[in-house]
Image 1 (cartoon, rainbow, N blue to C red):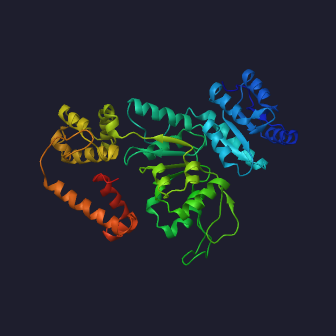
Image 2: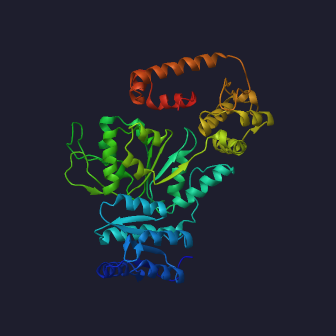
Length: 444
């Protein structure tokens, strides 16, 4: 249980007396009480008899590894954040500590600036009872309860999170919930679609640039890392990053520093990274489209968002929730039992996003009294994992037009080497429009 005394209490675990002295003095200036331990055994004795608000432990101790302290706290005092001190460049050690439940890590040499920032961030976790703002994940199915429990757990950490799942399953909503429930909730949340950035602009968009760095750079500009300072940077469709940019992103994650285009000096950056993709990240590694070392740094904790067809019991609650949002204070039409039955058996290639589109269209088509199955205008289903079904059968004009559009997009992607930005230009549509069309047609 958390410490209820006036001053937050921190347990320092290290066998270097000089470092302990330095840390104690620095934390005392921040108004914090401290206790010290030089071994794993001594640390566990402290933890078994005293409540702490934070623990900071070295990874190499005379009688064992600091990860033993991390695991003990994760099991017996899960609401107490624990951070680890690692040797410079020990990426594997840091990742192992985060997987075991560490809140964050700090690399040697340990400086007062590093420690102060980490401590301030960790102690904010006492405020995690705040409700998350914005959109939430609706549904009480077993998969959704598991997802929400994992979100609450990882929100208390600074570990990088990778969110997998099909298009439209709510990956960005989950990322925003992690941010809103964590210690960075008051800082920016910046969502970036990696597939929408031309390769030539990626470095300047991510890291910023100096004035005069290239033609048209008439002033200094921040990149995504600077814009999300202190907060969360959400990198959607991370698999779309070219290999050259993956190398630079990996270095930024490892060093926690970036260099602007046209700049000489590196600047420290403090962001939490959450990434996502509808593609199989492990398969991308096996196909040499994604760096294995970057995979291990981003995929410390994975959250899988279930497809809507895997949680059909949530469809009714989701439909009513989405209708309420779409009506924005207006009278909400009722969904007839036959409409709900049709929604319950539909296959949803676009998942929750497609359900929202179906309901938005139904609102425009219904007579205002209620929404029936005809108002839903659900696309017929020729075949799929659940067999042929759907509210209507036969070959409709819309099906034929959809197939023509699908083939045109396939041709454009083949001609451009699967580059969506170039394919959109070839088709004379915006990138956003192409993504929407691919989602509607079940191509993502």
